[in-house]
Image (tube, rainbow, N blue to C red; front, side):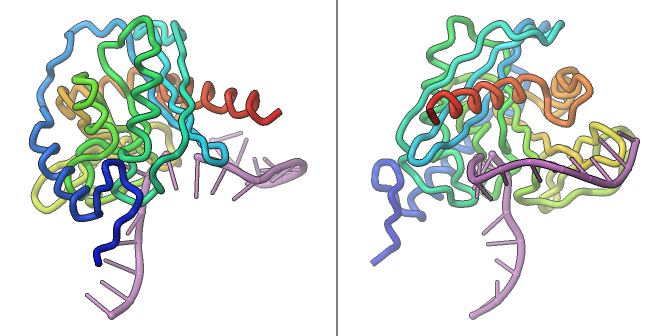
Length: 223
DNA sequence: GCGACAG
DNA sequence: ATCTTGTCGC
């Protein structure tokens, strides 16, 4: 019989793949967000034993100062399988987002958007679930290759004959970060927003804050 | 069949 | 992601 992993809804790998494919058709690669961004969100997750900690941080876009941070712990319900990260992280992360008293104009998500084998990385999946603008910000490439034609501070990530993202060089002599459309945004705007949020670090500030919050929870739970 | 593979 | 101190380098 087919390999039936403990996916939500009892999905098999094949069924999960088909779900990703159909959901990816709903992803919008255009700017459906305010022209003037006021609040930016950062999304990340951490793990302690059998618990997943979803984290969401809200920062002021201009000053990059933290306005609010929420976390939510849940039992881990799905194993980590490459290309199926969203099945593992969407639930805890959405719970954290629902605890927020304010919603951002766009979310920076720790993971890929459409730069995914079936076009549905965590950032895109989350964007569809929240019906919000999202940007995928990954530290490693999952699929596609970098086209070395750098004329600015980034190179296109191509898959076949399509540009699925950008390798953004944030600092000299430092590995780039991989940006891709999550939902309701264009790649150009996504790159612009991520660059604005760098503040001298490789990882954009909203994600760093979400990451910090998740780890602070870990310490509290540990003792 | 083999290797690669976000967090 | 996680287990983990000091250390090399900008």
